[in-house]
Structures are given as structure tokens and as C-alpha cells.
Length: 416
Image (cartoon, rainbow, N blue to C red; front, top):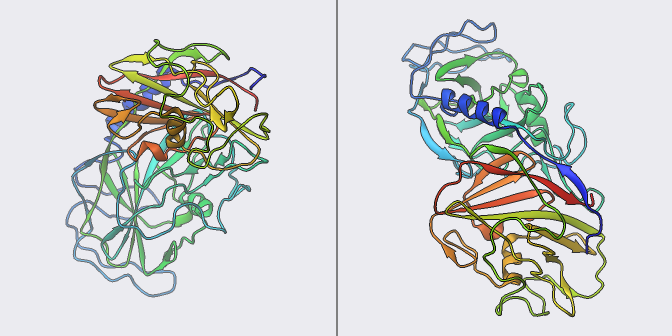
């Protein structure tokens, strides 16, 4: 049982969240349906979003990129939510072995997620076909030594093409830093192992600009879109309008050990179909189990705007405790085990003995929306909720029925 009750304050002010949403609304998720215009930037050429003739560009090797009859135009903005897969699969998920695996990379450190995030979007085309940017680039799984795991200030969490950027400070990031974290090459003739003549465009607020500077030095624009085309460019470049999560509330919910958060709804403990002491989904129940690996996740369930208290003593039986369990009605899920392993929300619900799907959460059905928040790095989750990993300091919020206007902000108790 957890004995320490240290506090870890994580919050984002309502003003900051509102400002971020206003920027998103103004930028339309970094794109729009309008055609581009010439840029006066010293690192841009006269590329436009219209049908302007192109005479080809000289490459550093002395060859030329084949001329195209028109410069690509911006397609009408496509409405997307986080978790949407964009493009055709090409690369494996995560960073490569030569990328960020926890060490400092390109002056970027791998650490616990910051408390304030923005994003840039990256599209990669090969001969007109859009390819999927892999998930979990720059995301390092927990180890026994670093039980919280870590993320780089630029990373991906899904296959939408979004590069999530930690903007807790005023630091800006470059495309070269992201590719270094990914562990993939980036040049005018090679993008992540795909070779050919490479052309780059930047879309900020609906203005498309051809970029002719050093690709590694290209600054990732907040709420903007970067496109890399290998070989024949596409006739149109996709652009996106994002449906963003609600802002964080400025009111802090304190998660006190032994406390209650929300309105009583579920019976405490496992249901009759839950764990009775036998192994469930590979998770054992034992007495006096060593807690060498000890982290916490959190679950909040809102039904038509009402916060439902999570049951205590799920996974705790008179004769043993499961490796993942609850001690109180705060929604904190404890993961206490002698050996590091992967835990999912589906395993916990099976120990509890409750259904979990995209249409049913512990017997509550309706329109279900899921948000995942890793210390301020928040996004909508569209996959199977059973597969959500239970990682340190992760908040999982279920919105069932009536939408919630804000996401909770917590003050945690935890031993890390």
C-alpha cells in the first residue's frame, strides 16, 4: 500500500489554454483552403499556391530537380481529430536505434512531459503519395531505473503527422532536431531513407511558401504545416483543421490518499465477473508482493457532465492484491509489481470485471469520447480504449454523453 503522500502539482491556466485555442481557431489547425502567396523571407523562393510555372531548382550535386508545370496548391482543409491515421504506412513506429533512446539528442533532453504543448504538422510525399509519420517518435518506454519513462520536447503520439512540441519555455525547434530524435537522415536527396530530389513547402495560416534553405534548419512553425516531397511533387498539398480537446480548468482537484472525487455510482471492489485471485490477463494476485516498480495512472468518468467516483479496492482481495488496483475513490490506479511490464486499461477493467469498449464504459453506454493527458500533453484518443497503456502520471478521461467544457487539473499524491 502506498504510504507516501507527496504532491505533484500539474496545471495549465485557463488563460493559457484559451489563448492556445484562439490561436488554433485563427490558424484553422495550421492550414486553410486558400491558395498560397510569394514570401519575402530570405530562406524562401517565389513558390505560390497558384498555377505558377516552375523552371526547376539546382541541387547541391549539380543536377536539377525536374521542372513541373505548376507549383502545388493547398487542398481544402480536412477536419481531423488526434489519433487519425494520415497517409500510407512506410516506417516502423518509434525512434530508430540511432535516434532518441533516452540520451541527449541535438541539444534536446528526454524527460517527463512538460506542462504546456503546441504542435507542428509534417507531411511526407513520395512521387505524389502521402506517407504516414510513425507514432511514438521520441517517446521512450519506462525502465526500472526510470519508471516514469521520458519524452523528447518534439515527439509524436499518433499517426496523424502532428509533431507535439513542448512550449513550456520559449524554445523553438527545427526539423533537423526532430529527425535526429527520430534517428532518420534528412537532406535534399534523402528523407528517412527515401532517396530522390526533395522539395519542401511551409504552410502558415493558408500561405504556402517553397523553402530552399537547409532542411535541418527549418524552424517548425507552431500550428503550421511542413511538407516534404520526394521525387514528383503532388498536385495538391493536404492541409488540416484540428478538433482540439477542451482547455484545462484553473480549479485544481486534489487527489488525497483515501479521498473521494466525484459522485458515488459504482460499487467498491471487483464485480462478480472480476478477478477472484486467479491470474487475469497475465497479471497475478499475491500477498506481500514486492513494489519495486511503482507508478500511478488516473481515470475520470463523466456521464452527462457528472463526475462519477471511481470505486476503491478494485483488485484488492482479502487474500491478495493484483498488480494493478485502487485504494480509494480518487480514480488513481496503482501499479505495484516486482518486475517492470506493460499494463493496459483493458487489463484493469478485466480485473474489475467491467466491460470496456468504444461504446461501453463499465456498463455506461452512449457517445463516448476519450482524452489522454500526460502532464499537459493532451489529445483525443480514437483507438480501442482497452489498449491504452497505464503509464506514470497519465490521466484518462471518459466523456459519455454531454460534452464537458474543461478537462480536470490535478494535484497528485505519489511516491516518485
